[in-house]
Length: 442
Ligand code: S3P
Image 1 (cartoon, rainbow, N blue to C red):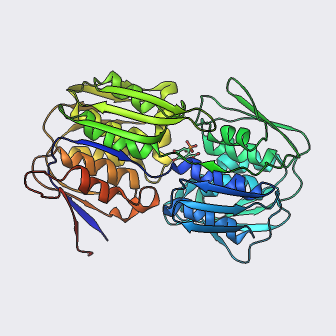
Image 2: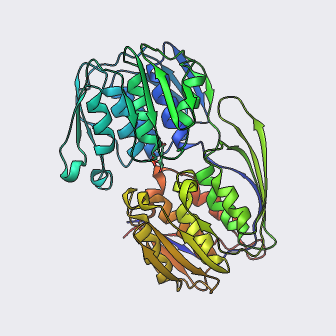
Image 3: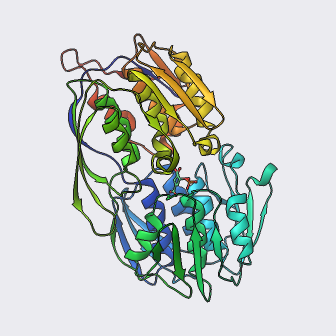
């Protein structure tokens, strides 16, 4: 097991970029793979999760070159994949398993998708229900319809699906399957989830139609191959944004970062908490992207709930840390989805914040965090969850004494360079002391 030792950090004054967006990287590979030609993808996130999607597509007969870690050349198969010779390992990646299910539902062969111990506990019923209604046969071999997931695909019928959860993964699985039908497939979700699939379908000229919370795609549609640049991941930037926001005197500029409106809720929350934030959209086509400038200020507690939740779903661990650093109470509600992420994130956040001396109430769908008391260094677990590891590495920068985070290898699933950026941003200029040290493997 790998661990990090973290000490209190200095004021942050820096300009950074973050690696490519995870959600967009998955989708770019999937859509390029089913498109009708060759696509050059730049800004790709070479993390374990996204490489699981690349590996899956290669196992399905798609030729993918990787001349540099962040550049892919994908040779699309115009929707026709070949049967895999072995199980497809999705690693830790729920996005790989759920989105791939949508494509495999339409392929005339059987595929078995497996995952690591964390993915093997995550719910798959949410994609099995609509894809079975469309005519595919899906069987989950794990308890409570958890992976491994066996998909026997074939001819699909279009459906109008009312999703019980605001999940971009469910929406995307159904829309991808819909491309292979002979009619119009729609998904209506209870709240707006991230819309990267819709935007990428538009980019690949597959013309989705969006009407409020309903997205419709036409069947018999082969995406047109086009090159695409993937901007930096706002969810990765969020760790540094909170580190800067919570310290008066900090000033951080993040460039080439995704600013899709279904993902920027974290900026709105930080503004409500008192941070000074400037968002500069520089590219509007495809995926909006640009720069974010943030200045630290004394933060105050806030309420995060309702339809804001899907927009900030991946940022809630680091926003909970922001809540602990803010004066007053921060309430997170309507976030039961956090219990079925890479770990039960509500429980993990509560355990770690309490270990650092913060009073926290855990409810069935959220947290009440009583912020403003000094954080104490502690020995914490990542719970095998990349976002818990990174959120508490940032908390460690604000704690009195040393913080140790055990089980940090999971960070490689979404943010391979996190450790280096933390070293660079938070090295004390006077003492040249790195605030983060990798402890020897145990
Ligand atoms: C993702 C959607 C979200 C998010 C996950 C990535 C995606 O999950 O939490 O990290 O790329 O579609 P849900 O769609 O299940 O909410």
